[in-house]
Each structure stands twice: as C-alpha cells, then as structure tokens.
Picture 1 (tube, rainbow, N blue to C red):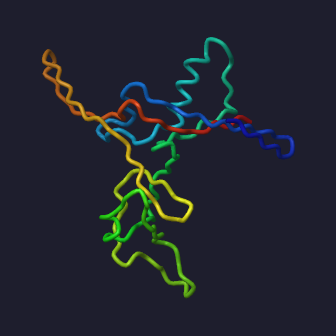
Picture 2 (picture 1 turned 120 degrees about the horizontal axis):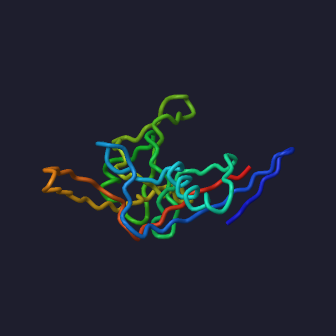
Picture 3 (picture 1 turned 90 degrees about the vertical axis):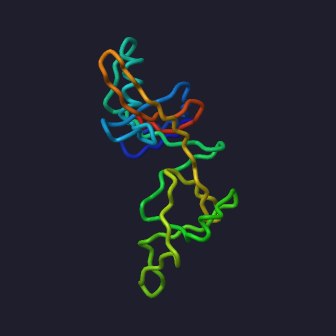
Length: 172
C-alpha cells in the first residue's frame, strides 16, 4: 500500500509492509531476551543487504518498527499508562474490556484511574472502535542451547514462525 503527501518542495511517500515470519527470529540484546517487535534498523539492514548489489541506498528512507498482526488486525504496543479493572481483566475475551489512562483527568481536573487498577500484561493490544481493548498475543519459542565441546549452555527465546508483522517505510 502506498500513500503520498506533498508539502512545499518536499514529497514524502509512505509504504506499508507486511512481514510473515518464516523461521524463528531472535532480536535483542545480550542478556535481555527477545524483543517483541522488529526494530526499524533491523528492517533497514535487511533492505540494505538485498539492495546493495543493485542500487544506491538513500539515507532519505526511514524504516519504522514492525508490530504484530493478530487475527488480521494491526496491534499496537501496550502503552505503560493504560490500565484495566482487575475484575474485568480476569474475564477478558473477544468482546474486549474498557481501558483507563492513568494520566487522563476528569472534568474536575483530577485523575480518573480504574477503581481496581491492574497492569495490562500483554505486550500488544488491539483498540476496538468502541474504545475497548483486546490483547494481541505474540507467540515465543524458548530454546536451550548446549555446546558440549566448549562446555557452554544458554537459554534463549525467539519469535515463533508463522506470525505476521506490519511496518511503514517513509521515502522523502
């Protein structure tokens, strides 16, 4: 999908890219576990590697992070300021539950949090048109790597294959 925006002398084109993970993916830093998204610099690296033989790669191309698609719906990372009522959260289903913004104020300019606040445990959420949310669940695979010759052992997790992600690319 391509969208264009012109302002003054500058012309920007936006492309939406969908990724299907066809093998387990490990993206992260040492001792921090796997990231639950694919960062834009990793996506840029893939494009640069593929394109370096055929064309000059411009710095005017910006790659944005890729986030989960769950049941053909685009998810967003769960904002830290969102919370839910813990009694409703126990019964979350496909209908969704109401979210509360910890920083949102009511008409008297006082904070209006959930009555029984609970942190949203999911890494992703789907915001429905009625303002309720559903959780977007990313599937991870945990592995234990053992190297007998070097007497080395470590555990790692990877994003499981078969999941879809979406990202955007902006070209100036």
